[in-house]
Structure formats: structure tokens, C-alpha cells
Image 1 (cartoon, rainbow, N blue to C red):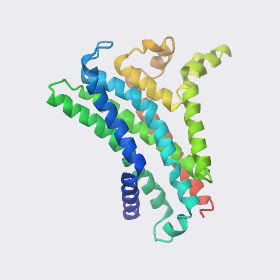
Image 2: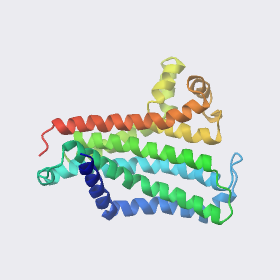
Image 3: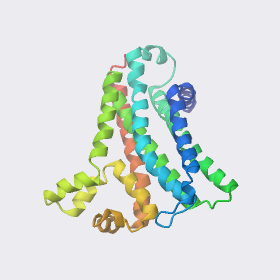
Image 4: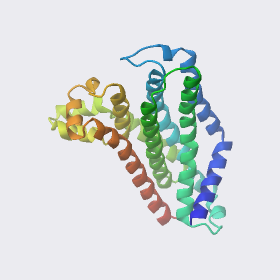
Length: 276
């Protein structure tokens, strides 16, 4: 089982490395870091942040906008594309358990989407060391954890969508609608509607934090604004519910759990469906 899982993950990773989307994906995140250095953003100061910490703050904001949609659109083609192309009959003729194939594909794709993001951040840190710029390793580690959780979360959602859709076009449409729905119902719109309905603040905040994009956004803000003053009165509810350290832990654990449950449900649907 483990050997089959590893071989499937390795095969999917190799296929991803050869794909054009991976080249574009890597160039996007590598180019972001290069441009931030080229524009001298490490020399600017915002809310007391300067140097590499200033670059990381900007990088995490850009990654939050690019990573989810990139992961969703490219991954939903995985299972739906194989089914549409009639590849299952060939792949499943080999003595590979369905669980090993599905989760191997999941792990291989996860490595493909996380490595470019991490390598770009690591390259920025190493270049900062060469340029004698102070590296905030605590912020670097937490932002790495956030990006890892973000990739895992949206990969799990994408695998679920990919198993539910019967064609590539439908899968891509569902992925775009999912991302757009999360984007539209960020705190500004959702909380406004709930407050108009006179819902209790705790209930409104809880519903808003069910959106993983909102969790990532708030966690990124908490690094340079521990009191979450930018969020206004919502900050009091969040800090009372979780505390500063508790929310940082929640921002990493919740997306991982959500992505795992989504992928697990996708596997159940995949195993019970008519594969060809």
C-alpha cells in the first residue's frame, strides 16, 4: 500500500513538473519575489516593518490572491480530466489500490504546488542573508505554515470538486464559483448582512471564520497587527474566543482539517462512483 502510494505520488509529481502550468506557476511566485526585491520594497517601512519582514507581508498578501485559484483550476482537471480522457481503464488495470492511487495523486500534487511557493520564500531569505538584511525567522516559519495549510486546504477542496464533476468544463466552472463565493463573502459583505439581520456578533464571526480565505487573511494581519485593530469591533470577539496565540494555531489547524475532510469525502465519492 505504502509503496503504491509513493509510486503514484512520484508519478504525479513528475507529470506536474513537466506540465506548462507548473512552469507558469513557478515563474509567478519566483517573479513576485524578484520584483519585490527589484522595486526596493525591503527598504520601505509600513507599521514598523522594514527589510525582509516588509517583503514577507507583501508576499503573503499576493500569495493569498493567487494560490487558491491556481490550485483549484489546475487540480480539478486531475480526476475529471482522467475520467473524460478515458485514462482510468488503463491506470486501474495495474495492481494499485484505489486508496493508494487517490491519496498518492493528492500528495504528489501537494508537493508540486507547495514547493515553488516555499522555494521562493526560502530564496528571499537566503538572498537577505547574503545582503546582510535581518531575517525574521519566526515570521518566516509562521508564513510558511500558513501557505502550507492554504495549499492543503484548497487542494482537498479541488480534489472533492474533481470527483463530483463529470467533465473538465464543469469542474473548472465549479472551482471558479467556489473561489468567487469565498472571495465575495469575506467579512465586509457577510458581516454587513448578518449585522443587518441582528445576528449575535459571536455567531456572525463564527460564520465568517468558516471561510478559509477569511482565516488566512486574518492570520496574515495578526503578524503585524496582533490586536487586529484593522478589523474593528470584530477583533474583540476573535481575541476573546481564541486569544492571540490560539487564533494563530487555529489559522493553521482549521484549513488542514477542512482540506483533509474535503479530500476524504472526495475519495468516498470516487470509490463509490462509476469510474469509467
